[in-house]
Image (cartoon, rainbow, N blue to C red):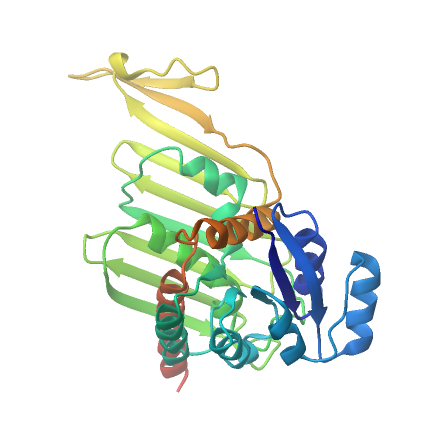
Length: 328
């Protein structure tokens, strides 16, 4: 099978990781990297053992696919040029700065019959992959994504920097259009919003309460999913997913990981069953890069499509706009 020649645009923190991991992706050939900071590019190239292109145009001409890992404000320009040249794309989240830009990329990719995958890495987190082993029908979702301050990423509000991860996951879990959004946030130590909370109400009645902060004393990446007779706790930081279920005698699981935590007596006796859901260990970033290459070779739908990225961006942008209006 022909290897897919990939070029990495951007050699910052994430770009370096992409560069190194592409050397381990099956059926991929790292053709080289490019960064406007050529000194940084050569540092990463020496570590990864790869070629440095003199300019972006040279890289586009030599590869089958472009991996875009530059600041969000440059996503559209770089992606548009690559698509025009007939190259498949992997773009780190958020897909673009605006919905209009995302839609333009989607239309161009469709016209050129090219693939776009968006880097919503939490989809590949072990905790999320464990959740995918069961069916969920959320009624209420609560998420907290808290991080200590890091100057990297402060070119955008915390909604686009951190909260968008949870927005993407919530949209993948709730099979219903968004009905209403309420949100508040504040800029604390940067010029953009550093802490934000949003309440997303869906047409089917599900409500998601989402909090993101990049000025916390400790890190937290947790989501709690509530549905009828079920409570699911997802810890993205630890890669652990736990489920508490109300079950009848006939529904008791035979899995070794399932334990009875208590019993509710009444007209119908039901048990509180605890179970840790599992999925194989693995590097989430390497997995998403592998699925990107696989999609190109198989001509299959990427795991996180440009439409997925656009939907997450749309909700994140609406939240940001609501916060801005509330601050006036």
